[in-house]
Length: 460
Ligand code: ADP
Ligand code: MG
Image (cartoon, rainbow, N blue to C red):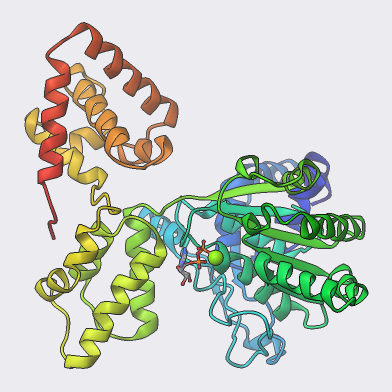
């Protein structure tokens, strides 16, 4: 550990190694415990070879490393032997994928634990499904909750509506609170912060306001875009920020766009928000949408078959809030008529939701099918590794169409086309663009394929 520490930044060290502890060892292996399977996966991904090499250097032979997940001791249970732990099985690739999409497993038992007065008890890391769209933000949020004030201060989480900003920022509050209930944790929306400040001004009690906000251990302010144009509140927040920053107190903010795009926000406040870590939340891809609905179905306990989850995940592509409202509608119906939901009833009930123009309804897979069929290839060819000319060109066309018709990032597109790098996607799209200039038949072909994708319609 000492040797590893010298090779990492303090931040990395604190984040990934201080929660790792030695458990036991044999001739050929060492077992360490970590607070969650999320942590385990991250540490494995980032540091397995580093740790392995160090162990080999020191011991003179290769040692395997085993991880045991030990949940954080719960405040009201106390007894360490009760906290569940399980041996990390050699994850098959299937499990690997699953853990990628699954939520944090360091469950805080909120039924027995006291809940924080300002926070929603169900906004926890445990109920937050992780996919590639949000893993960086969830990652950072979790690290902050484990070690507030030490790494990533301040942290700003930004992203569009319904993508989980409030859920994540409150999860930080909930987890920190469970870890240490004496910590003063304040969660407030920027709107309430503003109103409270205005009221304090009105009744001449700004000293009370300052007292409240400058004496917290963790300050969580949601939706700071609301502060635009509120100059006096900005001024007050600026001073609050400086006081907390100097005292190494953790601050987390959320915003609906990157800070650089905020208007009517003083430069000095902008630069404060930008000082720490800024992470974004993207719309979830199909697999993550599926995993989210599946988790919510399980939470609610209404039986909904996977085929139904599948069509919701395929058709509702905007954000998690829309996924939830589609599901709520189905569950309400199931409860009312006391019947289980079939694909047909779901399609009928969600017709309006699915045809909402806001919904692009288009998945990468649909595009791959249409393009594959046109070129007489299989979808697997497009998703595969082969780079023969017969496949590479259609694949580039499919990538190009995906970028034209959907909001998927080049990283996501790359992933769905055989795990290719985002630069490969960019390069492929550029190739198609330049070829369209020299080959006049290409553009009509692409237009035709785009129309076919649109006609693909709502399919179960
Ligand atoms: P935002 O604050 O970004 O507008 P919210 O945090 O309010 O979004 O999220 C909208 C809804 O979607 C909430 O009910 C939240 O619990 C849920 N949600 C968002 N992201 C996830 C996720 N990754 N896993 C599970 N639920 C999620
Ligand atoms: Mg919100």
